Structure formats: structure tokens, C-alpha cells
Length: 279
Image (cartoon, rainbow, N blue to C red; front, side, top):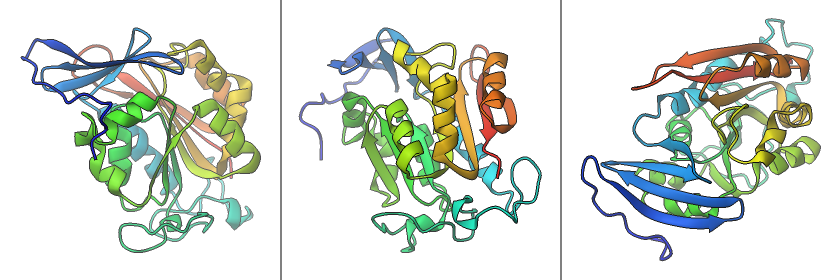
């Protein structure tokens, strides 16, 4: 059902930029603009993302699943046989932990907890969620988004063209919350996730709000590590590489730290920082 507070999109000429909605939210101003056939999100005057490409946002999720597909070997290359099986990731293609509190069924009628459990930090324009929902091997898919406007734009608003099938998937759970606070809660009392795919800033050194910097601090990375199951994967999107952040990940106890470049249509490549919690 369309949200009555969300204006209907209007057509924009190829080079025309139209402001679809401007809203003051709990963390400042957020704006949805349409440029030709594409939409873009601006937060506090800072460009976040648009619908023109999406390769790096999709790779964020796809590569995390590839890491988990290594089966019984942990991501440091050591056998994981002596790890507690109840705290290891649910491996793609076979049952994992059955800790889903509501027992939601997946698209094939099976319990969604039978696959690895994914947390996506930041809904954005919806590409990461769409990628996750299109992959039946994922179990529960939790998306944490703190901006009510962005949630409205997906729930029957202009961005529903990207996310509607994913939002209809019973594995999908939307949580309106600050990601940093949510991760600290998950680290303390659960749930544990098999993969964290985080995309709330333009990178560890280019945050949308000052408060987001705590996510990349030692305490924030410790919370990420604690929120992961043993052998779980952390993937962080960035507009540019950060050798300092790689060092921070290693200092926080992560293994298999690396940075992958993703070519984009114009400008310098995006990157995704990957790391894993040792099993």
C-alpha cells in the first residue's frame, strides 16, 4: 500500500534533477532526488548512492556468501572441526543454526534459519537487499535502517521498484534502528549473524554523520566481531580504499582481511573491505 506521506514520483527529463521529497529525520536532512530514470539519496548534503549502477552493493552480499561457502574450513584456512557447531555459520546448501525466534518460513516453505543469517546495515536504494533475496541459500535477512524516510520510500514509495520482491520475501526483516546501537545489542545478547554487510557511509574515513565514526573504532569493530558467529564474515562498502582500516580490522581480531576493487561506470572504483571472525 502506498504511504500517503510519500509523494508520487514525477517524470524527469534525461538531464533534469527533480527533488521527490525532502525530509528532516532524527539524524538530519535526507533527500530523495530523481535524475532522469534514476533516483539518488542525499543525507545532510552528502551524496550517498543512486540507482544507476549497484554492482558494488550487490557484490557486498555475493562475496560474503562466497566466503561462507568454504564449508567446514574456517576463513583463516584452519579446519574448524573443534569449533562449537552451534556457534559456526550455517553453511550455504545445508542447515545451519535453528535460532530464528519466529520460525518464519523461507520461499521454499522451509525454515529460513536453515541458511546463513545475514545482516545488511543500511537499506539505501535497496540493491544489497535485492541481491540477498534473489539468493535462496540465505536464511534470515535482517536489514537495519535508521532513517524512516528511506523505509517509506521502499514501502510502496519510489524505490519499491528495486525492493518490492525482496520485501515480500518472508525471510526479510526490516528493523528501524541505529546500526551502531543495534550491533552492540546483538554483540551482548544476540542474535548472532553469519555475515554482516555494512553500507551506511561513503567509507570508514568519510562518514555521513560524526556519530557513525564509532562503527569503525576499536569498540565498534569489537561489537561487529562479537555479533558474528564463529567463522562469520564482515563486509564494509567504501568509496575508496583505506589501509588504516585494514589495520584496524586486524587489530580487532579479524582474519583474512582484504580489499576488493569494483569498477564503476565513471570515476574511481568503489571498494569492499572484507574480514572474518576466526572459527
